[in-house]
Length: 478
Image 1 (cartoon, rainbow, N blue to C red):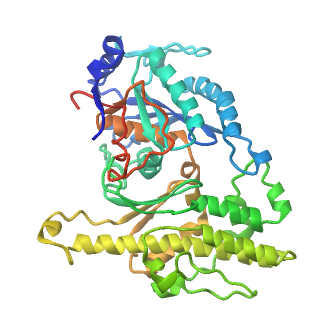
Image 2 (cartoon, helix red, strand yellow):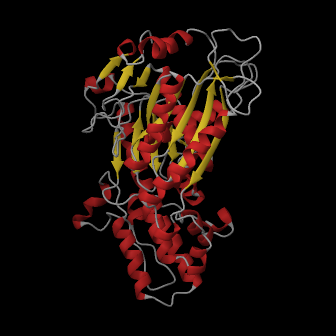
């Protein structure tokens, strides 16, 4: 499967990783500094995990900041602009974060690892390890963060842990629960949601529906065959939004929020959404007050078989929107709003339909219906949570459509779990949390790991999923 190395065989043997292992024999809280540079966001976080403190959150986010590259002159994310931003911002953010490291208590043991921090009157606790995004993403951007993380790990003589960016998105709700105060009178922490759950990861580069059955097992149920949902939304925004609205976006080239505000200026009061009750209704064209309508992706394939395929497709819908705009150059504001709303509704229902199909299939398996005796004996626990994460998850209309769709199609009991908007988009806090979970499971990375442009989550995939890539090291005694 994966290439494993024991800590004692690593280049930092006596002073580095073995020392780190000795430190972890105490019940001292676990501390990591995390770096995220997968795309055009440069982010640094410092996260501490401290189980067993009654009436206290199980994690503390001591520092978390992000700087986004200015891609405005390119009309979209440009690798060189992102790289320039990472190179100019990352060092500054890391230096700033060090002041937020926990102070070393006066009664601390002499074995407590510390680092001197300029402008700090007190000694600061040294992180136990560095968490950093290793992939997937733009290789030049990833390498900037990864090389910085390696430098810190070597300078401080602590381990490194390379994190899968999409795994971190799936685990983000567990970070949110750890940052929340537990029920009064309790001191134990159980991450929420517990496995298994469905993960719907939607961003500018990914559209993934996964069955997250454990920390490192996320079988793929559906993915886009062309462009990602976030990319589709940005394309629709650039086509439909009036020039003045585009200009008001400033240096940001992520137009999803602008499209949502333009379409629904009063927020959820403008949604007026009524979910389809059947698959037939969901793939049927809905009439509009104008001489156009939008068809559901894959619904009008030969024989109609595409409507049941477990895959996503948005390029055809994007082309339809552009054709409508090109055919109606004098389109007014009201019609533009209608087109924007319809484009989002059709795309979001396409996403929701596959989630319902996955739940129906899992429900059959969990009930043991139609299975062999062996399959029935190996039934998994019931899936009652759908995690929605990634940048597009910040869209309030998407959340409303998914919730209404699940309820209307027989799954009112399935909880839709969505992180706060600030944690839906790329951020280092989720990288820190994924690093902490992987460390607790006994994993770390060698200093020879390279950035991965592609890195899947499904162990059945060509790269073997989270643990299938080289560079993992198993911590002894875990």
